[in-house]
Length: 354
Image 1: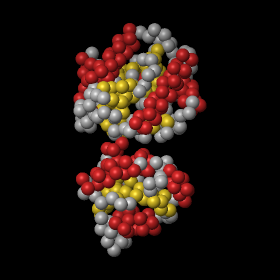
Image 2: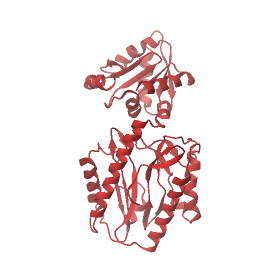
Image 3: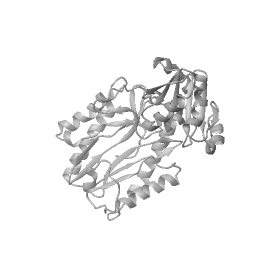
């Protein structure tokens, strides 16, 4: 964790900050190793403090050895002045995407009680930018999570029979991954049969899966906090000509992107590699979401791989490649792999047959 702290400290002067208050859960875990659900980090050039309540004091001492532990009680006004008093007059950044307006107001009022109040300054993406390039240990966790999702598809899909409900199949997949060691899943599994597949974020219901119709299955596992994300579209039977055509277009778009994405591209440029294939096939209006997103401690994180994304792709970034075509009244096809950029090329962490 000390390397991560050093990288953050190097960024503080660039942003005109003396310290950063970290409240966002994944950022807190990334910097400290602390997995509790409540607490704040205060990181300056010479201090690293984890402030948390009675429930997590002993846990934080075990998980965050690089941090001074401060036990907090009650409202912000009771403990925040003590936490920041040594910073007297400093510029203290806070995570504006995470802290609510009411929360900002509480911290500002507490800071104002000091003789030399800290200057609370909103920031965005300071720690998130560090999280985009993964360390070898992180890639290993993501690979294990991807392998577990692969295993679930390999084990469960052959057992799906016409007449089973979407909800039943989702439970079979979840039960397998939990039994094989996944932590609580990073998101609700999607099983979308027939016309329901036209809804990219559909929630499974009691709809029966029928033969010869597409079924979109989107799932992920979590290992040591790191989340995988993968989608396969299956068909119980041969499917119709439209299914074969749509599937081939989506697969072609995905394989094109995976063969040609390279470091230095923007997220928008990477997205265009797949999107152009779908547009040229006449289905551009049926691909309404981005090509992909980063994965890590959060299921969706930077880099963004989609239209208007200026994020620059780099080696050791992990993200998804998931083109799709969605046709109301018929259904959809999405194929998603989680990949890592390694030595200038895409390496797929997802291995399940597609």
